[in-house]
Image (cartoon, rainbow, N blue to C red; front, side, top):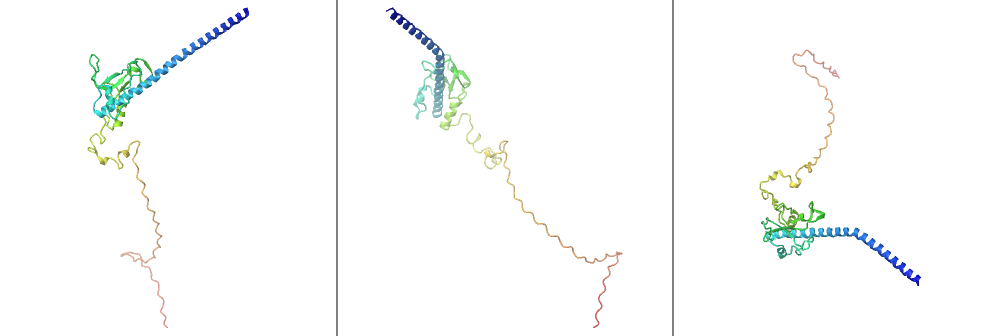
Amino acid sequence: MPEEIKRAESSRGFILVMLLIFITAMGIFLTVALPNVGTQIQRDEEAELVFRGEAIARAIALYKAKTGGYPLTLEELTKIRPRIIRKIYTDPMTPDGEWDLITAVQPGASGDKTGLPIVGVRSHCQKDSFLVYHDKTLISDWTFSAADNLLGIPGGDATAAAAALTGTPLPGAPPAGGAKGGSEGVDLSAIPQGGPANAPSQDNPPAQPPPQPQAPAQPAPPPQAPASAQPVAPASGSSIPPAPTPPSAPADSN
């Protein structure tokens, strides 16, 4: 009987030691793993914030291109047909999901933005980000705007995307025919044949004309035979006697 009691006590002590080792190991594991889990969750939320914010900014730019004005509420974006956004996304970085609206004009002293044209959104979250968006590492500084440099807020990406989808020119861009329209005021004679793309420049030197074929060389004329010597009559008043003439052969008497 005493031996059985000793065995039971030693078994309970072994189980208690194993339980303490297990709890200690789990504590170390959670201490190392939990910060990594939190970091990954925030990274995913930041990536989702960028996706949702850019989708809303792009929808606002399309709304402006189709209607000529900015929406007064985000819900107006869902009324355009065909659809320009799937739904009005919420802010994934805040519990209530409410966006900080960026308006075309500054709100009054009360800060109320009701009824003001909306050009973009940003998050209310004040955390430092793991991602870097437009050289900003504070999440509340990430702006998703459809207006280009409106109130000092860059928004060229969404504006360019909307212009590409609708075929409308960007604000401040020259018309397709040039600053004066068409060829008015342009010296067409100064443009080389083939259009301005072939105009000479440092990177595109003018094309050299092809060399002209040369005519074959003419053969040299054959040398002329020397002319037979002819007696030259002496000039008048010359002291050189004339050359004697050879005697003629005597005629045959027979």
